[in-house]
Amino acid sequence: MAEFSTLGTSTSDHAERGPAVPAISRDEVAHLARLSRLALSDAELDQFAGQLDSILSHVRTISEVAAADVPPTSSPNPATNVTRSDEVRPSLTPGEALSGAPAVEEQRFMVPQILGEGE
Image 1: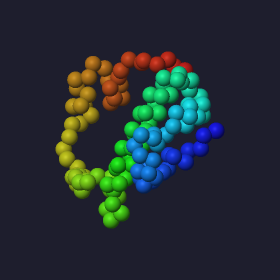
Image 2: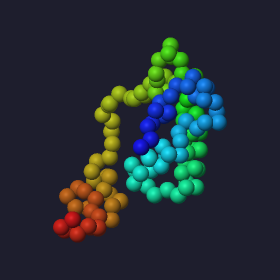
Image 3: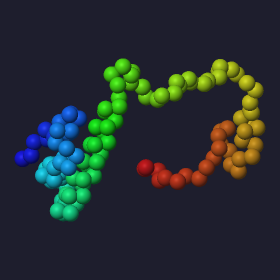
């Protein structure tokens, strides 16, 4: 079985290998496919190895940009929850709210039943 040591390699490890060597091999993709119970053709293994290598390369680039002195945030913009105070205001009476309803039962809208009794 293939070892996944290349998945966690640092940027300097990748630079030593050069860009021609993928960060994830075709054998590693085949191993992941077996673990996932996926039947992949040889062409799919080659395709996915290239795609996963590209993804890992982009993640590596993003990791290089992230600086240790920058605190992690969920958004670069400050978030402020805008709420209003909870005040009682005049509203419709039950009779007014139900005045346009086609059917009313015990001060509630009456609607046709869509599910059976046992559901």
